[in-house]
Image (cartoon, rainbow, N blue to C red; front, top):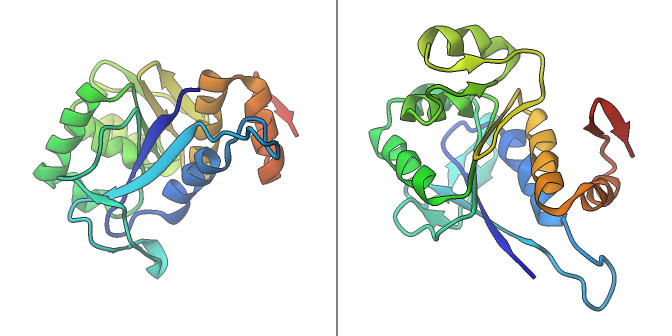
Length: 205
């Protein structure tokens, strides 16, 4: 059975639920749960620039698995947001890494203001995207090549999926589960997490 490698970027002042929400969704997803042949289709690890611990928003300290230099190949990358993105959009090392990784991964996703890092790296040019409601106008003004979409949980541009603010990253992750493994697996995972997910505007439990 296929295993997808999921990498989640971390940086100083990253929003906690931006990275922890998708981490939880991908990490708890399992096929044949509770049976002898239970299988986890996602291997989830974290990355920071140096590989040393980072302090997320509100003081949470996290030790990443890898640095930018020794991170393995990934199938899917999650670029979270938070107030730290206002500093990281000037981090040429990180932006170069995002550009390079975009050429290598199957899917690159963002949560909240993580979209600004993708936009600054140029990978959102001529694409539709979304971000936190309070930052939509700034995204529109600062990156006119991006078509900004309002009032949605996420925007799927095939290889790039951007999501709205904070908790919307969970919805984005479930959307990717649905794309890769189907509705039944997504719904069963959501039930384990006791989370309502939406397909075509209808909540499923």
